[in-house]
Length: 301
Image (cartoon, rainbow, N blue to C red; front, side):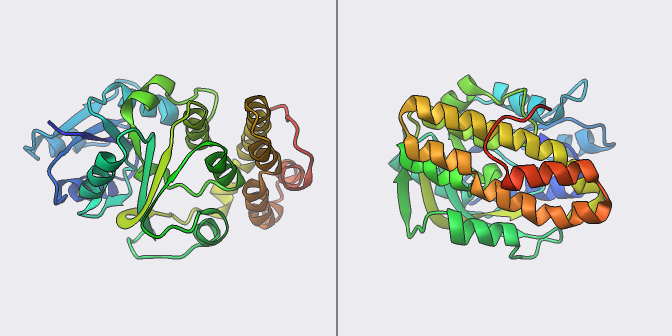
């Protein structure tokens, strides 16, 4: 029986999804099960899965569109094994991914999260260095050689300063994430919210530098992407205010301070600001400036 559930909440490009599935089929350790939950209606997709002929692969198509959070939770409902991966349908596993996760799971069976080494690629599959990823690596991510176990306030401070995890590459303790699930009131920052919930339950994170995952970083158009940035940063600010209050109640003052500062999120707002100014989005500019420079307090949506 497999110990790792690779769950793919799918919506989008058919070709990239097929490449992602092929990267699972190419694993050098066969101890995996792949479940794809299709939230779209692209033609030919069910037939393509039927032709794979691999009993480790299950394919489901939702009767109605559930949206990102709904489809994530649907995937969790279908998980059957000890570890789950919410695999991005445009990302790629390197052939050693399952082997790496299984080895770390055997060493740290109680860890709530396992983060392996990640290479960032562009839309064409070429290795790329972006400002966001270099900032993660240089400023926020812990310097790891080999393997490191992190937990408690140390972990909370690190991730609230800047979320350096690559969510689709993380292998989660199935029981814990199935009990918590993804929050329906969040659309952008669900990943960090889930991690914070796990940390408050006492779950630990294993970080390993073995390169085994390729994370695809797409270049979005400024006009299409920045149009949503107002609501994006309102959600982020309100989340960090809530997180600071939770950390205070838990007696983690350094984590509460990191949440109130939410430095990486403020810097992100500043990097987006020029494009929003060029777009002439006055409301978006006000939201970004308030997020970048304003005090840490709740903003009404």
